[in-house]
Length: 147
Ligand code: RB5
Image 1 (cartoon, protein in one colour):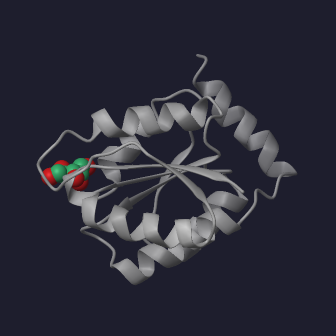
Image 2 (cartoon, rainbow, N blue to C red; image 1 turned 45 degrees about the vertical axis):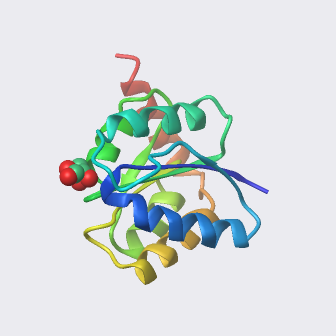
């Protein structure tokens, strides 16, 4: 079973609790990198360790939650090996797994409700990379970080 890195800031704390409960019930192992309350924190402090866990292969996929998902995605995409997608619809989540092989999903707890967030998490965890022509494109994307 896949191991999932998860982290949030204060804006994503409540949604993170619901997502952890949901994915643990599905049998996933969860590595929670904080934060641990709704007290104000800085999202880079939580995005970085969770993203590194995915980049190093300690976790298979990551889920990062802040108010918009945007701050988390900015941080995650600075970590070598991370392809983070900030999504607020299920079509984008499906396509970012199929075509971009995204390994981190960023969610905005102030953008989406719990029902949509859970549907997006399920799709993210259940959808595989299509490969083929997309492998060539992803190799080119990842080569950019070496420039
Ligand atoms: C925190 O107020 C908010 O800025 C943060 O959760 C996130 O939305 C940043 O991108």
